[in-house]
Image 1 (cartoon, rainbow, N blue to C red):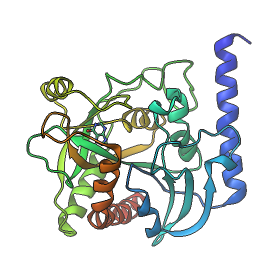
Image 2: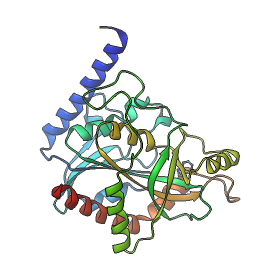
Image 3: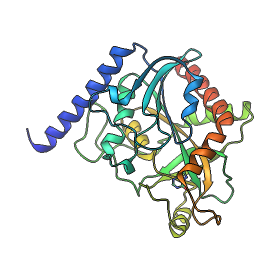
Image 4: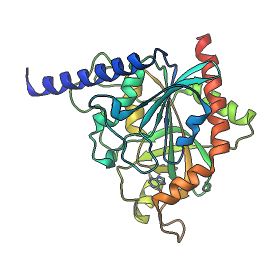
Length: 287
Ligand code: HPA
């Protein structure tokens, strides 16, 4: 076997092992995979929990090391909708490779999840945003993060050159808009850009990103969205605007403040996410 084939083989084994470890612990076939961003982990308490699986229980699984990221799968139900939730994600800045970061999304897809519902804390670049706003991600800029599909293509997941014209599912985004309206949750919309972190951006970088069309910036999400879309999952994302991006106020940025502000949006965030998951569950049942 050549070097690339060996890498691909061991990655596929890693995925198979994670899938079989999770299946052995919990027989639920999830419909929605939910990834909770920084400061947003408490949302997991909204689920009727059937099983919790720390990432450390899964052989060779990447482990969350970021502050505020618990590092466990929570599997359960929101009403009738089966959900697998990542309470704590994996980031590039922790030192992981792009394919490690997207491994959980691929595993959740293999477990049966049809939708990847991403959430994150982000810096607001758009002058119209305020800390505490929620933003529906309608598109992204991936140019500043390594592409997670570099390397051998896993044909069982998707094609070598996947289309990225509609990464964030148009129909499901509409359902989230409707839910926000019904729940009386103000919802911004915009383009999210992922940088690798872990340093925050400089003011000059924020000015550049604004000129490029970004509304919010963060250190996650985009590469997970690409891998999930490649694998045929339907992707949606809500960002919690935790701060005005660098240089937009006199305040220095801190990770603790990000987690704190994201946590403060919890009641609104929970209403929107729960309402949206229920709406997605209904829509998927019909289709
Ligand atoms: N920049 C990058 N990532 C972030 C920010 C930010 O301002 N806020 C929350 N995550």
